[in-house]
Image (cartoon, rainbow, N blue to C red; front, side, top):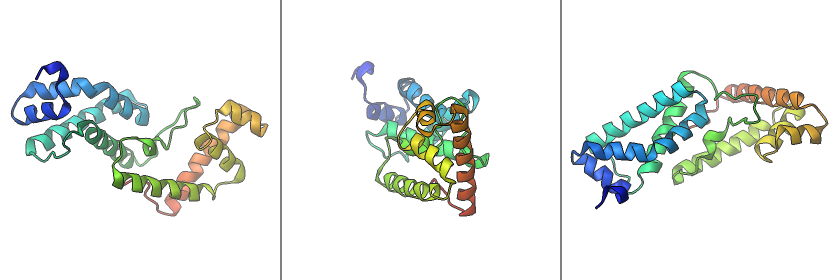
Length: 194
């Protein structure tokens, strides 16, 4: 089999048989996608690089132990490892993902990874239901902005036009909605990730 068309499964099997360059090929093949996924959650290049490296340390350890059994599902498996390490990072630092004043309030983006297995999908649905329920406890002006942004995917300019407030006010309401949502989550002692 030529290297250029080798499947992930073939490269994994080669690596497990001692071919070190097979892993290097796998990392090169998927680095951009995995790194971009991590960076989209943490918004910090150094942290993303650390988590990326930790992801592959975990991959290597699992493969070396012979504990890999995700036949043909290498990328989704690595993405799950990266996803879990991102969650561990936020738990360790005891904070929600940071967001910036840039029209990209992506605090719940951890919920939207398309490569989830059935169990994770059930957890994701449960988390989304919990989040919807918690949103109901927010003050109405904050709830309105949060729903427009998260569920209707409106820009802050559109939210500003529809609610009749300035973009800065809409941004402020979103920020307070997220802070208050965090307080509500803590008050109810809810764990949003598994």
